[in-house]
Amino acid sequence: MTYEYLIAGFEEIALGERPQTSDEQLLTLLDEHLSASDKELLDLLRRKNDDPAIMELMEDDAMLDRKDELSLSDEDFRTQLLYEQGQKCRNKFVREWFAYNMDVNNVLAAAVAIKHGMDVQKVIVGDNEVAQELKKGGALGKNARLAALVPDLKEVAEIAEIGDLLDREKHIDALRWQWLEDRTLFEVFTIESVLAYYLKATILHRWDNLTVEQGEQVFRNMVADMKKGVKLDAK
Image (cartoon, rainbow, N blue to C red; front, side, top):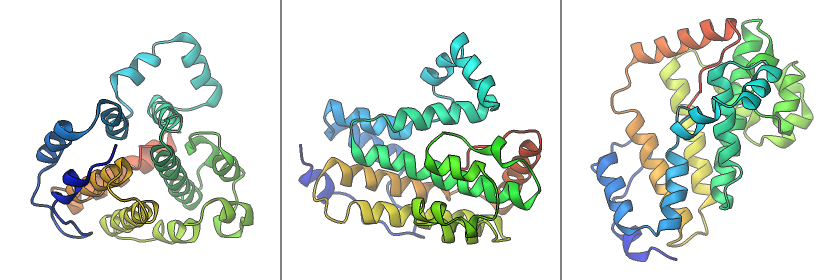
C-alpha cells in the first residue's frame, strides 16, 4: 500500500525547527489513513520499555531468571526486551531502526562507563556483535571490529565527550535524523516514508519543553544509576 495523498499533505519539517502540527494531531491523521497492518508498525515504534506487554513478560519466572543471568537491572532488561521485539518485526526499516538505536545507546553507555571507571559489561543491553565487542572494554576508537560494525562509531564517541548535555543530545538526534534520511532516500510514498516522518516529528517535539536543568538531572541520574549497575534508556 502506498500513501501518496497522506504524504503530500504532511507539513514540511526540518531539524531544529518546531512543527506546527502537534504529536496528537499527527497521530490522529495517521490513524485515519494507515492500514491495520501498518498501524501495527507505528504502534511498535511508539512502544516504550514500560509497555504493558513488556511489563507482563517481566512477571514470567523464566524471564526473570534470564534477567538475573544477564546481571541486568529491571530497567535495562525491559529495554533489551523492547529492542528484541523491534528487531523481530516483519518490516526491515523498523528492524534496522531498533538495531541502530540499540547500538548507538550502547556505545554512549560504554563511553560514559569508561570515562567514569565503571564496569562496561553491566551497562550494555542485547547480545549482537556490537554489544559483544563493547563488553570487551578498551578504548572505543581503537577497536577496528567495532568501527566496522558501527559506521557512526567515531561520531558517537566524539558526541559522548561533549560537555553541554543538551548539545550532546541534539547531536545524537542529528545522527538519528540523518539515518532516517539515508534509509528513506529512495522510498516514495511508502509506509517507510510515513514512519520516518513520524520519527522525525517525534525528535522535534522532544525538544519542545526540555530545559538545561532537566538535561543535567537526566545525566546525573544516569551516572548515579550506572554506578549501581543500572543504565537509563538514552532515548
